[in-house]
Image (cartoon, each protein chain N blue to C red):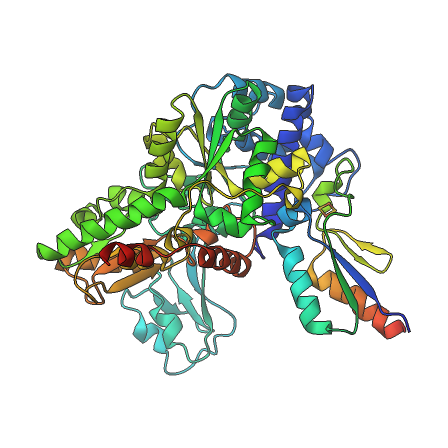
Length: 86
Length: 490
Ligand code: FES
């Protein structure tokens, strides 16, 4: 079975717009899921460079699903529903 | 940053858009369009009654972002005209904060009232508890006469059902000096004679109605004109950048700053001066001394607590000493203090060696607008090697520790008392100590306006926990003032 992959952006825009929320998403997910899922920290998805999309930062990918204005709650919800459907 | 995240996000978005407009070829027009781009025709209306109201508030936020007071807005002037006016301004606005009247909800006045949970009991402890005769009974439940009620809360404590509640106006409740209050129009107003610009109302308002007036356009204009602009970074900044401390200089260069100085450099001087000052005071019999580097506290002393002035250290702030060094080395430079809070605005205003203030949020917005990825910046160490204590000045207890480390007097004579956050209770204590002429808990009183220290300043970007870790890591790489002192003694 392939592990769910979560990519959390740690770039400047995601940091500024999310108030280091992306850092705490990264830390909490690692704590909560450990090896159950694959957690990757990425510098910048370069989504934020497109026109106005900086305003929807921080960004997180759960597999191919892009989560904008990502909060811990949102990300966990997506992960949980994926885990259930497996 | 958590519950106030949404209002912070809006403010940050406006700043980014403003800066983007500034670096575009059509500055004024692009500023005018900000509210329309954020709420275009037919868009969803997330917060207020209609799109027009939302745009009006966004317009006001943009005006504050341009550095003007909302109180002066006649509502007729176009945003593009404000944008142009910001470019011609020689000096920034003196008062740091402004209230957006259209964003202010006009919250119901603070009051104590009896809820339907009242059981209309026989004993009526609430009536007995009230010292002002404000509570009567209408046959079904207790009723409070708001004219007579002094909001002391004794009835709340007395009710066995906890049926009595107190509502508050968040900004009024947060302000430690009673400087913000609802006016006759029902909206919040700031009394600038009382305001110590601590910014607690800015964080407290869930509608984001209080704003700092930004100087970001003034600063960017100076850079654009090719002037030598130098950044003086507060020690707290290290904790709020998603990069290594060594990458910060390059990040500022990318914006167009010509040099970066750590204010920790001046903190070393403050620590030594304060330790010396404290030793002299103790030796001449003074009962206690308070620190002097928190701008909010200094304003408090000036406006509300003159009686404690004799007990405040004469040492100047780290910013003061750093700016002095910078102006000596670069007499023509425009100096910008990079600040975690709004309170430093007043200090900057009074110090001819510092020209502008840019807070962390505004700095972050510049990085976003210019697309600067700071984590990829080249690494370079600062020329001046600041001490461990200076680097940790921004943590609560940090200033007291620095004085201890630089202490040359009798061993064990320094007994720190840390005021971690300036609220009404802390102010009462300080008042009392000044009156008694002694502090029962110790002799070196460190006062920081924000709980947690400057790393928790109200214009900070990241979380307290994260910032604390980064700062202590950086501090641990520096040499302690204590070793320096011991080496000299050997
Ligand atoms: S910083 Fe996160 S997408 Fe660019």
